Amino acid sequence: MAGQRAQWKGFIKFGEVSAGVALYTAASTADRIAFNTINTATGNRVNRVFVDSETEEAVPKESQTKGFEIENGHYVIIDPDEIAAAVPESNKTLEIEAFIPCLDVDDVYFDKPYYLTPDKMGSDAFAALRDGMRKSKVAAIARTVLFRRMRTVLIRPHGKGLIATTLNFDYEVRSSKKAFEGMPKIKIEGEMLDLAKHIISTKKGDFDPAAFDDRYEAALADLVKAKIEGKAIPKRKKVEVSKPNDLLAALRESAGMMKAAEDKPKRTAANANAGSNRPRAARGAAAKTASPKDTPHRKAS
Image: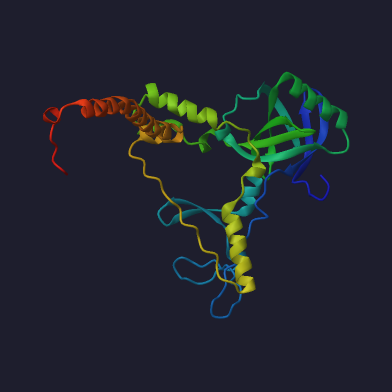
């Protein structure tokens, strides 16, 4: 990828076939607005300093090491060289262990995506792997050492190349059973379910990432611009929170049925009034022909 530095270079191997590949970051937060910590008294940037938790004295970098807490306030010291020696040796090879259906991996295991491209040599082997996976509708599971750690990687066809997504290990993913264990057992049926399905059907669409803007980042950009130009800080728009009486009423309103329900009685009343005009007119005509003693007397209201 022109203009971008590869995060990792190595080989991808399937069977006895191998090809040179390069990994490039697919998602980055580098373009987000970043703030520095400033000393309000001097206007200077503040540097981070590590301080001893007991003596409160600054600790220089050469006096710092790693430690694992075995009990409160007691640590086993681990030298950085010992940590480096524990890292598995890297042979710079993404060894494909299995091809699996594309939807077999729950996306809760997805960590970070990387674009996987051919690295000059071995482009034919790379294209054969990409097209074979696409035709077979499979993804590949591979393992290698990435960024000083053994990682499991999910590889899928993506455009002209492949996309490699590092996967969280099983111990890193929290159980969904524990997350949902407190939820009551509720089964939605009848009109409520039909309304929910109707609302969903009217809101169907396609995912377009360009249609979703980062409102927080845009607000920060406006704030920074206003401060630079000496203008008034943009005011936050007031959010009107709806307060539906109950879920069913909210579903009906969302489905556009509340208005129809409100209009229906009005039409019924109008029809009733229109129908009652004829008997009233007939009674008026009969009253004219009736004798005075037959006409009932009414009090003026």
